[in-house]
Image 1: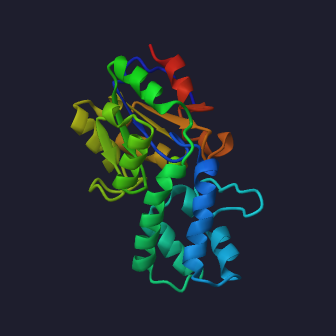
Image 2: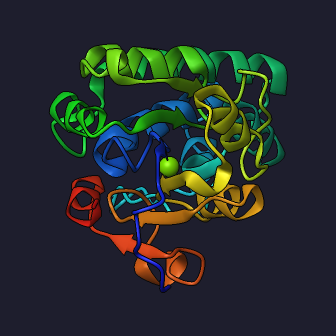
Length: 237
Ligand SMILES: [Mg+2]
C-alpha cells in the first residue's frame, strides 16, 4: 500500500459483486440455490457443493477468492462438476447464468448507488463496471438501482474483453472513454480485481471490504483498502 493520490485519475472501473453490492447479503441465498441446482436432488451432495464453491453453510460467509466469490458462471459450473455435480458443465453454466440474472432483484447495494454515481459523474469522471457476471445481469443491476445512465462502459465475462484477472476489461474501458490505463482507478473486493489493475497498468488499485476479501488478503495487492466505495469520494481532489 502507499499511493492514495487521485489527482491523475480520470476514470473509475468498478467490480460489481462485493463492491457495488454487499456480497454475503446479496449472494448467500443465490449460492445456496446454485448448490441446490448443481446437486440435482442429491441432498448429501448439496452441502458438499456449497462448500466446494466456497461458502460456509453455517455462517453464510463466502471465502475470499473462492469459486463463488471470483468465478464466472462457467468457472463455477466446471468447479461444481469437478466436485461431484452430475450435470454437464455447459448445461449447468446456462442454468447458473439464468439464476444469476434472476438474482439481480434480490441484491443489496453497498451505498445509494444512483446518488453516488451521479456525484462522481458530476465531477467529470468516466465510469464503468467490470464483472465476472454476465453483461445482462450487470445491466439489470444498473437499471434496478437507477445508475445505468451514469455508466460509460459495462463489461461482463461474455462481453468479448476477456475475463479477470486478464487486463482486457480495463484496457477496453480506457479505450472506450479515451483515457490512458494509468488514468484509471480499479475498484474491487477480490485479488483478481487488483490483478486486473496491475496487469493493465492502472493508476490506482482500490480494494473495498463490502465483499469477500479482507484487509489481510487485499492489502498486499491494493494501493488503498477502504471500508466501502463511498470513502473514495473523500480521496478525490
Ligand atoms: Mg467482486
